[in-house]
Amino acid sequence: MTEDRAFLGVEHSALRQIWIGPDAARDRRAEAIAQASALPPAICAVLARAEVAPDAAQDYLAPSLRALLPDPRGLKDMDRAAERVLRAAHARERIAIFADYDVDGAASAALLLDWLGAMGHAATLYVPDRIAEGYGPNAPAMAKLAAAHDLIICVDCGTMAHDALSAANGTDVVVLDHHLGAETLPPALAVVNPNRQDEDGALGHLCAAGVVFLMLVEANRQGRAQGHAGPDLMALLDLVALATVADVAPLVGVNRAFVRQGLRVMAGRARPGLRALSDIARLDTAPRAYHLGYVIGPRINAGGRIGAADMGARLLATRDDAEAEALATRLDLLNTERREIEAAVRASALAQAEARGGDAPLAWAAGDGWHPGVIGIAAARLKEATNRPAIVIALDGETGKGSGRSVPGVDLGAAIHRLVREGLLIGGGGHKMAAGLTVARAGVDAAMERLGALLAQQGAGAPGARRLRLDGVLMPSAVTPELISGLEAAGPFGASAPAPRFAFADMRIEGVKRIGETHMRFRCVGGCGTSLNAIAFGAFESDLGPLIAAHQGRRLHLAGQIEINFWGGRQTPQLRLDDAASPVSDR
Image 1 (cartoon, one colour):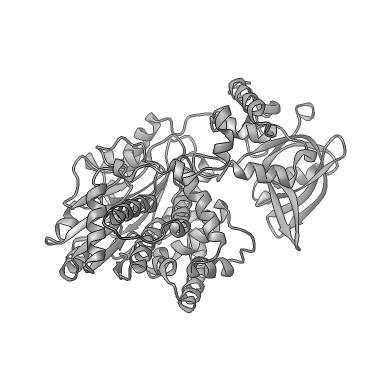
Image 2 (image 1 turned 120 degrees about the vertical axis):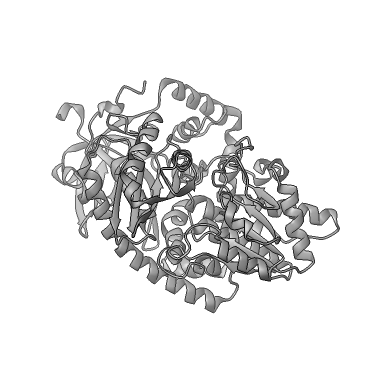
């Protein structure tokens, strides 16, 4: 099957998507994996999509951190950074940690605070205020920290902070970051960043917490060489997993092992902050990557968006149950407030972008009074609604602060860097999938027009229906807890590793029930009489809900993810619907 041939003949679904199934080459890979491993066809299809070799299937399903962990010394400046941090810890020097205000920054800071705490040493935590100070190190903060500390460690920031790091007044600065770097490095003792211009990019998929973890691996190695036993790093993988998923880092290579192992650590509920936040969020199952990205992550981010910037890092680092409960409660309330603010900005941004037309390579919006703390989420929603890179800008006075999100295959961070070099932006930076910027009010239109042109060169906004990629066809009788468990072993799923999606052909729709204002449940029945429960979240916010409701007792092609529904002490398989379409014979 080729890319231009619609799967099951679906060229225009309820959500106006063309369904794309596996091509012939992928089918052959899946068959080869099945012959070598005796795994179910559905699992083989997912492994084939990931281009797993037939003889490597079992190893892929059980990723080993020992096997996948790269040598930290492969990153430039790593030896120097680890040696300086280790020396400061042993000598009880005064250490400050300057962290970004998002989940990656919070987790990175907590990693260092945990590691230092296990060595009986403490550090000063500094997280800049998003509105008053903006992203990354600033000169006044660095000067103040330098006056009272011997070492400053910048995490998830610092690579582009040339002027700010110059203000450290001779105090050693170590940068542990992953954002795209410029041709020149800032004045620091060490800049460890897999996305430096002089790196080969082999580890460019790491988030900042992954970089920090590798530095701690190297610090422990150097410590052992000196006769010192280092802290247990495996217990810190819950933080690395959280940051990897929340920062939308690609779930490939060592990132898969980080998340798989980290979820196991998190399931042990040993970290007071994550335990308290999970309880407040009413998580009553073992955590999955979905929970990190959509349940835990947003709550930790809420502090940096509209509350005290350091709340997330303090929650993740605390060992006090009472403090954890208080911080988790406050973050949960802030997250509710954040959702309300974000909804208003999102609606205005979407209306503005739609008014500009739907054929441009970039969806963007700018407005006065928009809260800078929610523009990143609004950009993500705008991207999802338009299937294009998106920028949302909060204007204040003569400047605006913007946040952007991209789509696979379009490097937004590189384009933002180019606009800075061309003088169209005051500042900006980021990585492939997310970036931030500062722009003069008078220059917004010109900057966005140029950005759109650069993104168009990468294929953004190309004409054609959106594609829903599917891994094959299943019958309801094939959907068992064992199959779902096997598919989960092929994960975790997230950025660059989409969750498996399957089509269910010619399903009879029964038992349609509306849930609240927008959701629905129903039952789909196959030709041999076996059935599968299904749920469709937000179905009535689109044409999907009305289509399902109108087809009760009739047949539809369905597409979605299979999962276990935990309810009332029972575990039953269900389909989480993503799309539906009428069979060709009914059109």
